[in-house]
Image (cartoon, rainbow, N blue to C red; front, side, top):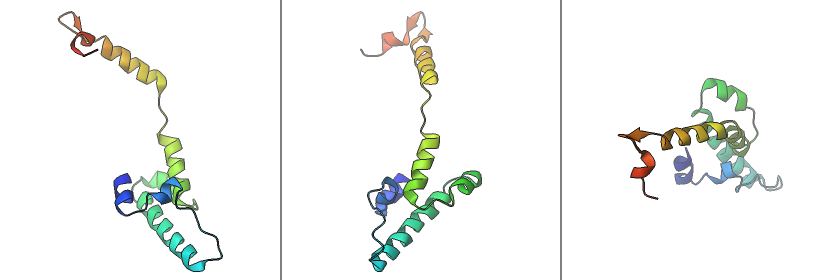
Length: 103
């Protein structure tokens, strides 16, 4: 998704760097709404119907992106610790993985 947004010069609509312009310039405002809606449609077509139903009424692509980021970018510290510990305790012929890895 990020590659497509970058190639189409639309990444600013999700990171907030292309903000909604003042309502006094109607041409610029209409252009912003059109492009924002294009990005929203790409996002909606990239997620499941259940997720789409929960984000469809957001006013901007940036708000949708932030919502999705908050939902799905949460790291699981205890699980990461457990996986790292298991990895370091792997052994082959009584030699631990850490023996094979450079320090």
